[in-house]
Image: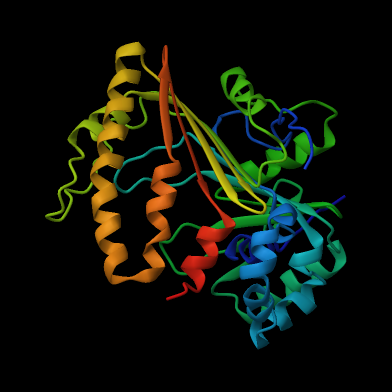
Length: 332
């Protein structure tokens, strides 16, 4: 049965914008060569105390704008109710100048395939220079290309609960085959092990295999500020794995784990991070003297804890509800 889509719009709209921890599992639609995965629990974020208090009304106003409202109506989509989770898989990732992204985006929720298909067809007829319907074998998909020479994005509907978008037609076709197969995700064992360490209830979770991928990373020179980044730049090049979780609730909690080349590299990274935060503290304090909204940043920096053990470096920090309230509307 031919499947179709109009996913980019759905995914872009979604992206534009507790219980006991349980190990996460890789999404079964992810390509086998995926090396970095980001999971955004969109519904959990929207329903969190902080978003409800400080951002939900602004999000609603954005979605209620004339253009957005018409598109969403055509799609039969209410992102605030219909989108559950967004999974982004980066394939053969390269962190260097002029890198070409290769990715698959999976959006889980509640969708109306017929309306998505109809909107895709109408869009292709109305603006054929940017939107078109294309095929890969028997698979019909939607193509969006902003202008000639720019990277195209393809999308299709998997079923009433899932839509996908990708940088290549092949990734879409493979995702559809994976959806039909009653098999777990075919990602690398190392990546699956990293993902398993993440909390599947986290608002945002990221896992990446980075060995040999950061050799060309260059940090900015500091612009005259008394912050030295040489040690951090060298340490970054020895990172092999990364796992990040951000939990948004009453407060925002961040936990980052870096798997380094060896124990010496872990020590170098810990020292580089210690130096960075030590240098940042007086700068942030000075900024707070001129801008009241920046004062809570001192508390945020004070909450940061950095440790290392064997080959691993961990960093944790918190932004409290009180911090956010002061940054949004500080009292004199």
